Image (cartoon, rainbow, N blue to C red; front, side, top):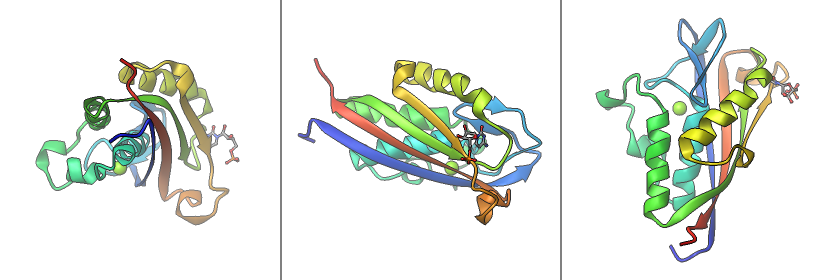
Length: 163
Ligand code: C5P
Ligand code: MG
């Protein structure tokens, strides 16, 4: 791991389900439906976790937290992200910035942007300026556009820790 900078990419998708909470970046969003999943189904945190693991070439979230393991049933996804962040530090790196997109037809999410950015930043020990969260619809096309699922994307830049 001799490089100064490393980038990582993450993506996730979960099925929309009535009677489940809609958690995005650890923030509960007011909604008539939520997302199905073994854990709390926080697609945004799953995408960021995969981006961190990807930057380190340490596999993916399912390898570290298998969804067949009863320990992770209903698990708070922030613990997955913080585990990946621990690996970043262990390998001698720090996060420069992260950029994300959540793709969900409804509800409108823009009023949650500041809260989600601040929550992720404080949990990760980052300045809010380096945590970007964007929202898109899928223009009513495909499974996301038809309201069957939601997706999230994340990209992260790591820099060798300056000591
Ligand atoms: O997908 P579209 O380009 O139509 O989204 C327009 C804007 O609506 C986005 O830039 C975003 O700020 C906002 N948006 C939102 N909640 C969503 C999807 C989009 O607030 N679920
Ligand atoms: Mg997931």
